[in-house]
Image (cartoon, helix red, strand yellow):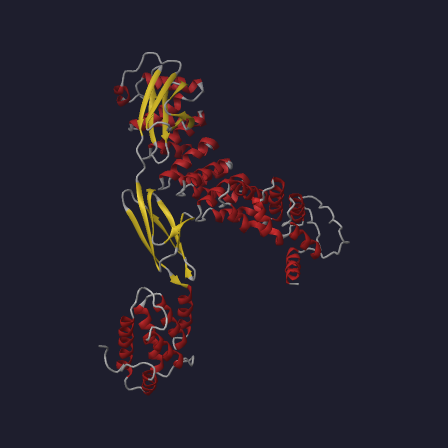
Length: 583
């Protein structure tokens, strides 16, 4: 009966008409996805299809998923979500399509699905979100701020696939994400918007984040918006070599549209590195008029820098092509020439155009190696020594201990927690424990150091009692329960203060809870250690702290009759004279 009531409620939420079809009859066909009405299911048929999702036979699961999708049955979302990992390909695909058809009600589950360990169901979650399209954009924008790295990566990718302009500003901000994959997925997605994204991307070209500026300059290599030319030329003097080079490549791809400003730079700039890049850009423009104009500058020794000519003799005639041999220590480093992948070291890259090229080598656990080179001879050689990434240690403790630790959204263990050989980067650290408010912070791991953080977790129970006391400070029951909670947690000072606050209320005869007798019982339990104290507290220390707290209340309220009555009753349960200081 309870199950049927749940299904009826789901059907009403969906706005489905309760038409009673004949036994075994199939629902009517849908009218189509665009402007189509969902299939109409009566409660009994909805129940049958939900049960069928658990069938042992894969064809039955697939058929049920398909019909529930056509009916846009939100009640089916939990089971359909689990079917993203169905062993049968057809059933898995039908569940994916169904979740995409159901739309908004499926969004929370699908966003969580972006963090699944298994690739296959994770990709299906991405597919369903893409099917939902524009409706999913707000949820995906929010997911760009998710603490889980895989969720942010997928969200950045999907927002480009959906290509809704609402995503432009969040994606631009995403280029500053601490996760490299997320940054570049956000940048790639922004290229799908063309000139629409220019304003937002230019804003990030001035970011304090080096990685963000690199991504922003790279975006213009795809969008080629002439409105970006002035700031890209300014980027040729960026402090970071990769930003400068990515801006230069973008300008070269823009061709003639950037040439006038580049020639102006050659005439006015006093920076050799900036002029060197400008020459490289102009050398690569295919327009013969621009090449001729550049040669004129070179003849007049405007474009050539003294520094460049001193490095090595320049041949009278440049070769038709250059073969560049690259070696690295350690070997098997990934090589990019002008941001294009060419292979692993050691290797020889043939048929390169003479002139300036940007070479980058990367290898896991090593810092990137980059160099702007001028290739002048038929055979050139580069040797790169890659440096190991600086490593550090993350140490997380918590009060109370044995709390779950998540680093960038991934569970790592319980406190006290230590992880060595971590890249020197900022990380999102989240500490969780049942009955406590989660603690979260960004922690920077520094090279060669142990970065230590302590999460002081606030009890949800404590927060509830403190909230009640804020509304009514004369509630002795709340003070007493807090005192008990603090002792269980090993917080003796807080426990003694809570007992003193409760006794103070009793001394003034102001208790609104009628809890005086229970307070006496609780003090007696503490005095006799009738329950387990936390933090290795010993009963002698607890008795001394309670005695001092109650003696302080007596000193402040010794002339008040309600206090005399309270202490008289307390002495019947606890053999101590609280009118005297503790020994």
